[in-house]
Amino acid sequence: MRKTRQNLKSPEQELRIFRMRALLAVVLVFALTGLLMGRLAYLQVVQHEVYSTRSEKNRVRVEPLPPTRGLIYDRNGVLLAENRPTYNLTLVRERVDDLDATLALLVELLELPDEEAEAFRVRSRQRQRPFQPALLMSDLDEAQIARLAVNRHLLPGVEVEAQLLRYYPDAEVMAHALGYVGRINAEELQTLDAGRYAGTHFIGKTGVERFYEDALHGQAGLRKVETNARGRVLRELGRTDPVPGQNLTLTLDKQLQTLAYELLDGRRGSIVAIVPATGEILAMVSAPGFDSNQFVTGIDVASYRALQEDLDLPLYNRAIRGHYPPGSTIKPFLALAGLAEGVITPDKTVFDPGYYQLPNDSRRYRNWLRWGHGRVDMERSIAVSNNTYYYSLAHDLGIDRLHENMDAFGFGRRVGHDVFGESTALMPSRDWKRGRFNQPWYPGETLSVGIGQGYWQVTPLQLATATAVLANRGEWVKPRLASRIGDEPVPLDLPDAPEDITLNNDAWWDRIYAGMEKVLTGSEGTARRTGVGLEYRMGGKSGTAQVFSLGQDQKYNAEELAERLRDHALFMAFAPLEEPQIAVSVIVENAGGGSTHAAHLARAMTDAWLLEDEEPDIEELREVLENDDGSVAGN
Image (cartoon, rainbow, N blue to C red; front, side, top):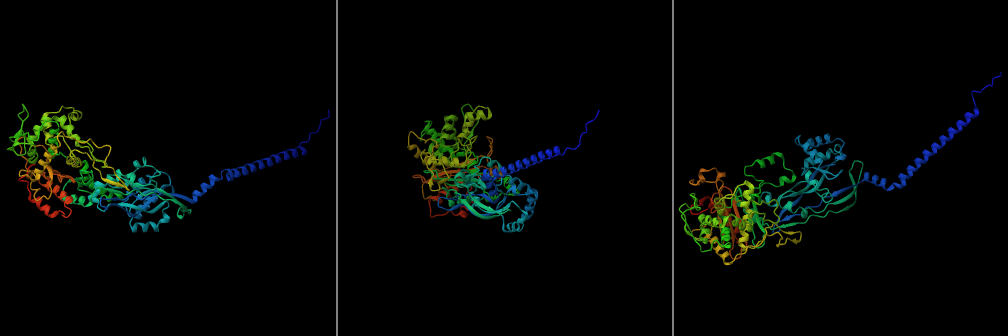
């Protein structure tokens, strides 16, 4: 059988295959080209705005413009807190190639301790959004700025920017009243308005600066700038100016504040002065003070540790947070409580043999004058500061009524309107002791409270406020530090002011005033030496606060005690009696009886405010204090 021959090669089939492959290749090329052209069209046309904006951002940068912080003035227009030009070191982390190397170089160029590199690292994270500059260091000096300028090419993302920095001309005198600003920390960043605080590195930390932060800060602006590839600004394309903070006018009088600080003469203590009719705080001093400017730029560890470890506690604001037994300064208030509750009349007398005893109790609660004052009525009890009269009155009132009446004067509560960080101190009560110690209240504790001892604690601001209410015949006006915010006055009729105190007989106020005037001018007055030569009528009350309790048969001897164990000296006063213009409280720690040291300081304050032509002679006053041993005065 004949076999058919098969050809292994077919030109026609190969040509068909080639043509098919070529066609597929052409289709694929056209498809890819079409896809590419479509993508180009999408990017160039549809996404034009998006990518043009991104491109613009590589060339154009939006920078925040921090507002100028409002200035702070005293009542007479004297500048208390200003802004001074300074240079700050900032860093943008996203523009730094090697953060460790950059921080190490900065520490070397600025001639700082090696541990500052870690502090810089922490601060570099304290910002509100990416690409926002973080503040590393404030107040660069000229040498540091020069070294950074020479090495700028080695420091991408690092800038030296000019900015206004807070400065306090009278830092130590005003430190506790004004407070200070400081760097914004990580915790504060979480709560701040990012837009309002854009570009801002400082915020009020304490005092007036903290309370009025919203008014003082202002509103941040912004500017659009063109930059080169290295991020250096070439030109400004547009701006929205920041809104500066409002200026603040305080009620403080710089001269009186400075005088109060000088009167304390380096001793631990506080002086507060208030205008009774308006609640304006004229002076609010806590001594010793500290240099608040250190905290603005960032206090170094060694300096801060020294302040913390100082036994005199310069960082502690005694005026609003210091807790002191009020001692006998509260006797006029107790007398008013007795009158209001019908427990006493102005002419009711108590016989004082030198002590008081509770019924069926052998313990003797002693008067400061061990042989007693004999027959004592209300006015004389205030003038001679008789303890026995007030033991009896406190026992008749009882702790419940006593607490209620003292609360009405502001004891045991925050009394200031705009005083940041104020403490309530402690006005004890039956319920308080049950909650604190799970113990009942004992009658003997009421007697201690009746002479301003025991659990009772007050702040100097509370004592000055109560004195102002007393001078106002019971009318409440809350103490305040600001008189104007910008051009707007701070109103006097604050909604949270306590209710006014009323008496059944308005003449009773005059009887209380008469007793307080005799403290300074009466023949038996505990502060009669202070009242010599008074050119106006003044009412006051001395007080002595024990640092530790004496046994029943022990006698206090200051010379045998360490200085910090001696009694605190207190005095409260207002003047003139007819139309009070100033109420003062003075507390000097470990200075002994209030009828000597503290009384003289209170008199110097009222003289300075009421007698405008006379300026107290500090050196002469120091001699008076050295020579007045209190031998003719009481507690």
